[in-house]
Image 1 (cartoon, one colour):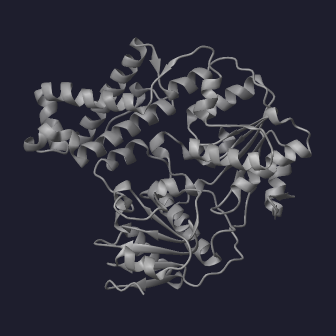
Image 2 (cartoon, helix red, strand yellow; image 1 turned 180 degrees about the horizontal axis):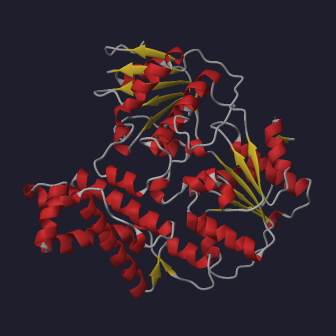
Length: 456
């Protein structure tokens, strides 16, 4: 079996031809996940005589949806491809006023401006959290406030996308300041939901939840979901509800090693323990990578698997690259770019890490997921794992049984390492992160180190 002239390997073909009720495909970076999805569509249409309008493909973002659409169009297949949000919207019986994320931002700002300012006790507590009295007038322009707001939005999205009851969330053993932040978040959550209800509005999570609680009938016989490792309880409930009223088979593709969207409400446990959520699951693993060298996949695989909660994968590559990891101390990015041959992608943990770099092919690590280049430069590795004081609270609230510090940041670092076909150049500026120290200590045979501002 081939897709775009490329022969699929035995693991891909085996997954594609499996016609179980639910097939889950666990893949590694560069293992041909998209090729496998395209191969599944081709197999269903050309071998199983499934009609194009009986197949639905779901992906995480509008960008990944469009990318998949382009590839399917090139294969002359007119298959529905959409996000979960668009699927939920298509199942609604009546037109609703749906708000975007700006509405929650507005509610948080209004809460801070009115309630906090007018409550002496809360005002005092608020200043103790992040601010001094002198900068309260310009509080919303500070980086600390923006980070706090991100945490609040993460909490509220997680509560909604996993359909949690805040009355059952226990607040203890987290310290006075963190407890006060949580109380603010719960108050904002109540205000937000009441404002939506009183104005006849819903957000995207409400839309998906509403579509999960009614009889729905669709024409689809197969639903293919990409990036399934980043699925929330609400999204899964929507799929289960569709299966309840329709004879549908699922084909789920993802990589738990690249689960990096807990901040948007996604739950890794769904992918890792899929049999808890769905019956009659058939499991497959894509065992070859066509992007990374064996040397890089060995180092990065051992690094990410310090987290024993994740699925074990034995990934094989026939590509070899001597010492694919280059760690650079106090070097200038322009000096690095002068040396590297081939296409180069620049990535950073946050937007501020890359915003002032004059280079077209640059992304945050989150945005780089699914992309690749001959060589990759990771700027400001000092910033990974990202440690903001409010993240202590997130770790408490989003806690899992993963049994390791910074589990999602570790997976994010793995994503950064595996964007390259040849070498990953890691820039260290002022403070060597714990992840860099771990690489140097445990994977010396795969690393070149350059110091004192002289990259090459």
